[in-house]
Image 1 (cartoon, helix red, strand yellow):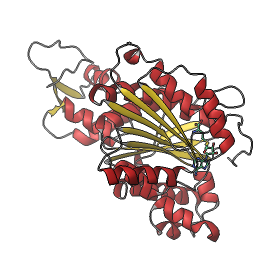
Image 2: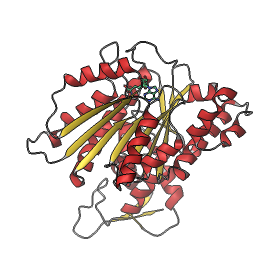
Image 3: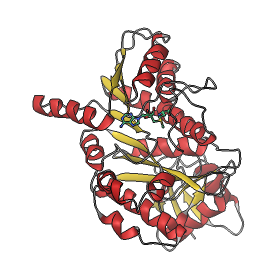
Length: 372
Ligand SMILES: C[S@@+](CC[C@H](N)C(=O)[O-])C[C@H]1O[C@@H](n2cnc3c(N)ncnc32)[C@H](O)[C@@H]1O
């Protein structure tokens, strides 16, 4: 979208889905992180005013609500500290956000800071200070949600990622990025965005599909190699006009984080004619639909494991989590392995540990499965 000039603006349908994903992810991430860390941190690099003109709440309030409405944190004796940092360049939006935050009653263990100004220089100076003191960012979920391509340098993403248990969820505004790719005036922004000048090799690509794939693949590769995220997933949002609107990138070093994000994606049905898909591996693009394509997962499993001895259920889960677009918590057991076990001709042989119920759909730890 072209960036609005008003302090608050109408929400777009594709923003609503991003918000659903953010909310669902934080509902899972906050309690998991709070269990093992005394202090956790939600960072919103492009926070906005906190509310849209139709009254819908923006990402800062979504994140706060995910915390304050969560049963895990409802106990009065909560011992964790949860810090929210909101960065907003536009003064009137930052002030509007402060007004919104005043209306939220915050318990003593929650603090919110609104930083007026540009995300990249502000966060860089905070990280410089930490570095000088020999300290680290607390485990952080960084939501980086710009309107366009400026102000999100790859070297800053890499600095965030270099801190333990820090992950990034990034809106990559493909339409804008693609539109201005050949404009010489903004080349510096692109060098910073990608952390390389290799995007210049794509400028002459005239096939729109190939161009999109090359841009998206380059950004994903940079998140893996320059930022150093062990797991990067790439989600594509296609609008009603069948145009790729944006990509969401999630970078993490944690399998648990990856698992929570995939479940959040699958639960956030875009509806309204918009299409949302996982295209991390372009040979496996899978749409997030209310009825997932279980036949596809069955065939992926068979191709991957057929001809091998019995495979431990934990290795099968890891494969689904790391190498497929499906969710190992939502899709694997009942609707995939369960169906394969019940079907005739038999597609799998199941070896459950002694004393465990022999029931299709139930695969307790140490179960082994042979794909026939
Ligand atoms: C897409 S909107 C954010 C929406 C918000 N994250 C949400 O989901 O409700 C982007 C916001 O970033 C602000 N912005 C633009 N450039 C910025 C920069 N370099 N640093 C911080 N904020 C910036 C804009 O004023 C705008 O409010």
